[in-house]
Length: 479
Ligand SMILES: [Zn+2]
Image 1: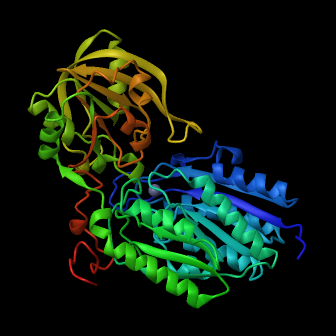
Image 2: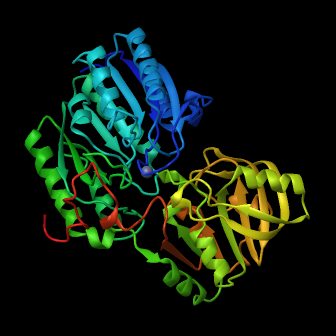
Image 3: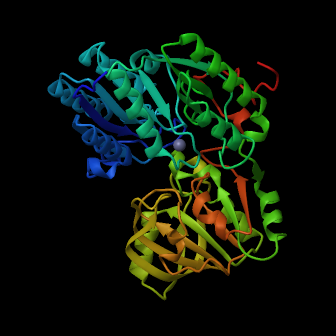
């Protein structure tokens, strides 16, 4: 069948909502300065579309750092802007949306489902609608009912965003050309947790998912869920897309979902309680040990200023440590006022909410100041900005204070300010797992720490009010 010249509509609306976070996500949080070409998935869609002689119409790019629920008027404003662009672009053969899948706004548990449903109503049944999601998403019935194809990242850390964008393009364009008929099926694993794909046995399962994308299976996605989003449809789900064969999709989703269920204990992020983690780190000879403060990962909506881990280091008199990054623009201001070389009594961290712990009061030396500090992103595709930042030192601990809230991805979060890392006993990063690619090679050992904070990794104890409590590990039997 010859290819039609297709009209392809693309847009980006991304944030991950931690419904336990005290930080509202408002208009300022959504970075509207980013160009369509800055979003890797939209670039991939443009490139593929132009290569195939299709017309690509690009709508909004709106991305916010994860935090608490989005303000209602802000969400509705972005959504309506996207939908208005869609109306103007009609007729549209294919719509490709780069979404997160765990976005919650005041009055909307399922922003992505809401966008897809309204888009379907505008575009009509003949438009092929596809969405790319983060695997830390809530796959909902509304999303499934209104999209033809949903593809999630397979990798955590997320190193395959562009590959999955290309998968989605191929699936949707083939469908629009009448070559395939995607049908989706889901198996609900009834699990809550975090599952790095860098370790076995999950590594092998993910590889096998890719290998099975043939013979009538168009795509397999393991939705890991986002544990700190308290919405009714949260949790781990296996999604299969088959070509026209609903029974095959169902069977395959069930098969892989049950295999994940069988490996849930080994696949779960292995986090060590704080004191035990410090003991283990100090007992490791030769070279820095990287400790991940999972619970204060700004990338999961946490405040990024919690002090539990730092306080434990100070109380135990541990030195030769680099730790960051602490979101505290007020403390950064004080350091700029004092100037490099000054020694001051500084109160820092512990400001944003109960998950942050108490502030630290310490005598610190201001080591270095930068007006525009930044770090590399996981794939080096763009810089991640910290804004005005300070390197301070107290009792042998080097601390990075920043003015923009983000997790740590790369060593130049420290070295960019002049902090050396190879000579440290401990490097403490506020991140869950996205630090892995760039820190693991320099680490003698990596330990994920279970400390208090907004992203508690005690998954059985998360204080859900909305989602049902019938999930593993809360219920530790066959479900
Ligand atoms: Zn994610």
